[in-house]
Length: 513
Ligand code: GAP
Image 1 (tube, helix red, strand yellow):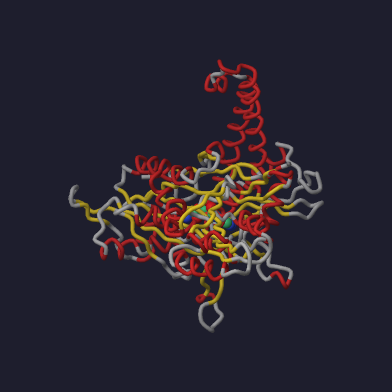
Image 2 (cartoon, protein in one colour):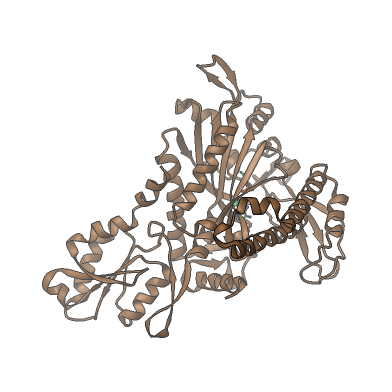
């Protein structure tokens, strides 16, 4: 099936099975804003818990905070967002469609990268056992030609963006022959910069002094609290501050469902280190974060790092963890070496010292920062995309199953009486009462048992138990596994341990420690 069709199916599945709804749908929706439904919110909370615990619970030197969305307007001048948080936009005059100039060029480069990967696949087939990928990449003429092309485009485009030379940015697009996917023409307007921050008014007097912004990243709430946390927590370098919260960006080209939203959620951790040690920590956090992703057990080949050519105004190194979504490899998380830019800027703008006294070096300095920043919603989309599976089962029927890692699954256990009579519902309710204290459980008695299994497969429930006649005699139930569909008879007394072993986050944490 084409990847585009799979993506459409995932989006439809999200709605049909109560994961994600369009915001204000009864009013025809609000573009790039979404609501999480009954199953979606459970999955989202589990993703957040996996991240939070892996940061705050498993690291003695990382603590969490929850700062306000509104911040003093000077924050955003200091951070550079008022001056520089903008996207270069270009319009196609024929289709009247608007694009981000950098995304047009990135997509073009993406196609060249795909050509390189196809060449590698061809080589692997041709040379079979004796295939040396490293040597092949370093010598194949087609790969080398495309690599040079990518490097040339990157250096020209990055230079144009860094010099804020918008005419040159447009010229790159024209020289590469990039056309509008809708009209098919290269009839482009000038490129303009567009600030992405939403603003609103604080208080009742509508003048400029009261303009405040909805935060475009959660990171600044951490920076302005750096000294408060360091002092009250008696934190010693290196240490980290983690936060999960909403962020808002007036994205111009909002695409691909919850991949690019105007209101979204971030999980960010700022790790404060000694100046000069930042590269060591940058590399360490890249490894740690990739492990966190890979522990979920999805196809390991679907992850890769992408090093930033054009660095944000605050960074001296940056890489993304990219995942192969149905629409191609795209960023899920960024790891940034932010130097002392943010703390120094806040020190300058606030007039308050934000330094750390290092007892070992016997001197004070502004710490450097390594940031890990991941979008909750993008992680949610990754999970849905990686977990969605259609499988032909006995009898030729196709079942849709979400192979969500059990620790993240919205519902852990479905409790199903075989029929609605003979005391089975009562027994099932009794089990439900004890199990729901530890796990999110669902009780279902409507429809055939087969239909109920399918409904649970479709929301990714790892286990279903069926209460039948034998249960009433010997206190055992049948336990059905979502992935294998195998059933076994187990004692009710053993249920807690069986389910707990399957769904515990420990299964994930053990792989990342
Ligand atoms: N504090 C650094 C920062 O905000 P970023 O690369 O702009 O860096 C970090 O964003 C992460 O936030 C991204 O990797 C992505 O997962 C998520 N993100 C950013 N913009 C988003 C949007 N419009 N919709 C959904 N997620 C977004």
